[in-house]
Length: 117
Image (cartoon, rainbow, N blue to C red; front, top):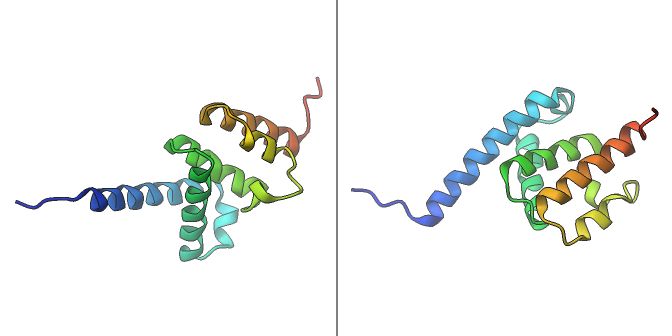
């Protein structure tokens, strides 16, 4: 019988997650993917996962949303002075789910403007 160690299982889970997220980015951001080679897209996803996790985002849904923000606002949006709304949200003490909702709302207003009704 074979024994799968925790480190091996974690590596397998990470690979599976990255594969799914690459597919997610390809599906939702085909124009971005046209500008990236396969390895560059894999790096985009891996770096996005690492940065999102550094801010406390661990759920798959939140990792995908982080990548969406990277695709829309730029790969370094969390450090971009052109996105001043990001730092205060990320520095907050709210749970990750609330922070992500706040980021998505602020990004929507930043990209498409406020409600005009």
